[in-house]
Amino acid sequence: MFRNQYDTDVTTWSPTGRLFQVEYSMEAVKQGSAAIGLRSKTHVVLACVNKANSELSSHQKKIFKVDDHIGVAIAGLTADGRVLSRYMRSEAINHSFTYESPLPVGRLVVQLADKAQVCTQRSWKRPYGVGLLVGGLDESGAHLYYNCPSGNYFEYQAFAIGSRSQAAKTYLERRFENFTNSSREDLIKDALIATRETLQGEKLKSSICTVSVVGVGEPFHILDQETVQQLIDTFELVTEEEPPAPEPASEPAAADQGGAEQGAGAEQGAAPDEGVAPMDI
Image (cartoon, rainbow, N blue to C red; front, side, top):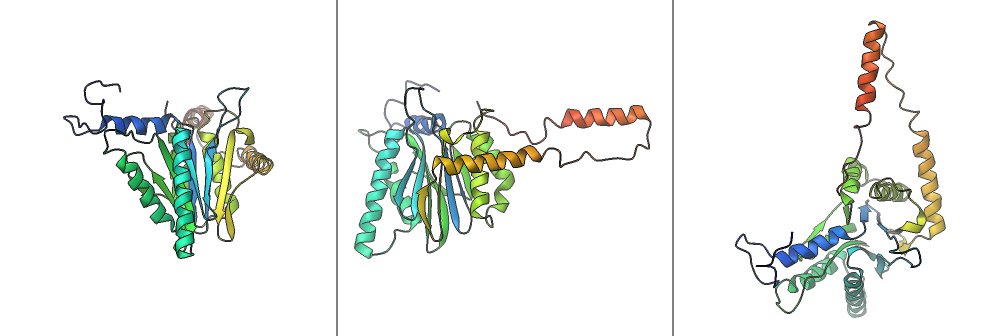
């Protein structure tokens, strides 16, 4: 990953047409704690993992309110994310003061992408080392955008960024077709399950995750820890009750007992691989 010939300046192209410092900033996003976003027709849910670096310290804030109808979750350098969220807040206030109407989510995302792009074209600047999931609601409905340090932005139905986010993406890809018509509670449940996928077996608790919601008739707000823990306990009880439900296919034992045992052994051998989300290291 480390190169020393073409990565000394953000404006220096490599012979293969790459800007390594921009790629390094995108790598910083992958090293940050995971952030997840989902949207339906009426709601957007943002969730993130916010572990503390030490048992003696508190965690850093990863979800920021921009306006009553917009919020942002970050992965990467928290300081850069804090500066960009302050910029977004300023733009939203200026638009509201000038036009007396809420700032459209898409317009704010474009302004943010333009600001990030400038840092890839000035030799005395460095790219922002943070990725942002911008969720909001405007006249055209609910929106979820991902802003990349390179200045690119994309709209998603559901997305995950940060470390071990591939496991969450795998879960979201299996479920995203249902998100459009999902209720607020179902979106939050899916966000918590996707967050749990990024923990690699560690128990999900409200102390290590943050969840926020914005929707029709519901301004952007962050759920308190007690509410999040109740939701976690609820869906964990459901998942504990689920394994007995899918009964093994009771095939008629027409074959001999040895053949039935072989079939059962094959089913048991295939079961661990089925539904397992790949983990990126």
